[in-house]
Image (tube, rainbow, N blue to C red):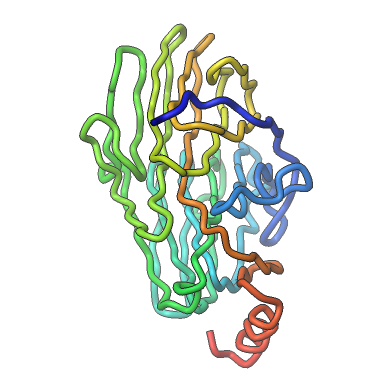
Length: 275
């Protein structure tokens, strides 16, 4: 039986920098919210100042998890040491499975203008941590948009809304990833799969989620399945959920494994050029 969702805790993102000094807001992966199984990190980047992003994210390794990059504005080119390359444009999504390891870069394609988007880190189960790296990359026109009720528009990156099915598939965590735009006064409810862990992040405007008010840049951790939204003014929110893995997490920097020994092996493999 699905339960009405309530927000069990509210956190606000912290200023951070990553790569070669790119300024961003870290929302998951902070002292206030270290992780939310299966999600390890959520970063929001957004600025009109080229000096905040031009240095980009030069070559860096990953092993043992997935990165999800959702671009709202700007262009980012990615390359890796397995020969993969592409450009993320506004509205596009890349779901990268690092698996056993790769070295990649993410560099701005622009010299000026606004750069804005999100990167989410999703854990992999132990059985998949040493799988072959792969990409699921989708241009804006591949992301379906549902309009379930008047005043509500939903970009379906993963999951399903009114027959619109997101292109991302990951059996390990069965993710839901929705970008929801609500007009002033609009309301809508969405039912998550039973047992999923999830969150709502208000990134433009304020929104009521159940009986809790979320202000801009606040994240609400969900408890329950039926998530009800009501907008007081226009708002945009992310609704993200996935099946928890319930496995031990050993992580350091760009490596996320299950044990300290596996972490040490990841460093040894990277230093030996085995990625």
